[in-house]
Length: 366
Image 1 (cartoon, rainbow, N blue to C red):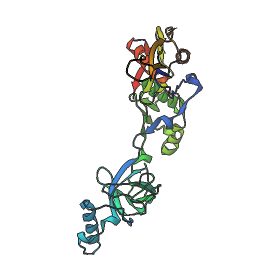
Image 2 (cartoon, rainbow, N blue to C red; image 1 turned 180 degrees about the vertical axis):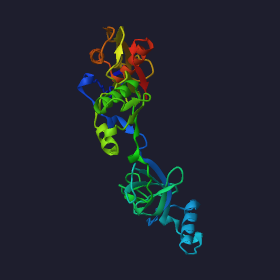
Image 3 (cartoon, helix red, strand yellow; image 1 turned 45 degrees about the horizontal axis):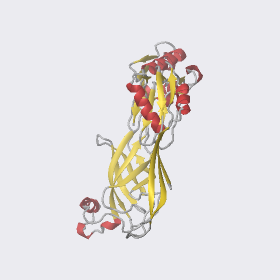
């Protein structure tokens, strides 16, 4: 019987991103790489009660649910003993939603509910009317409606997660806020990935399209726009044209590796200095050979079958490849594939090249 153990990392998925197009050959819309300052969603949250559960609601110990139900019924003019309430048919939840920018009164939005008590399931429940507030405490949305879980189950068995639910269109905007956006004559664009080269390209592209002094860079992440005189009062039209301009963002030299999954992402601008790479695998072979052990004719004992074990250690011949200065990403990938390295081997190789000072890129390990 032969047991072979190979001391090499398991072969897992590697993803290589090698963008070989020249900067002039491709571009991204400004709406995909930047956003308008002040035009981002507002996060809302609130507290609510879900009722109509089939015995899967909060149990004893969730006193806040009991108190909430009693207080709600008192406000409705119903006097009730809170100890007489059946909590198993109700559950306390936290409600969250994202209020889109420029949302008007009457706009409906989706909301998410998460149990905060000891309920077993929110399936089949209905959310009672609940206010959603901003971080400053302003009530902006009212939420209510029947829950959708997306899973099936009961108190004893379940499929999918039953303590988080959504209500499609369950929130209604009751209070809108005038941002004065239509009256602005200056607007700031914020880049999703701040970079001085990219922000300079954005400003240059806008000035080439709308005239000089329309855009100016504030820093690596912001570009300030001044509405041209001929676009006065046409802010929406101006922004629509701006966000459809194409700009080539600059990509930093970066390698991202995920040691948990063995994923390797290599950026376009990665270069290495002169370095020699060597790679070899260690193999141990264990062989068991059956043999018969028999005592002498007059000696006590019994005939038995034993196993003789022999161990051999072999090391595959290492392949050495010389990488000259300025090696490109394509050449690097081809070289690593040629010496048969796995993604997990690549992680160690990149770390070693970085430690040697030959890797002209940022190495990010997540």
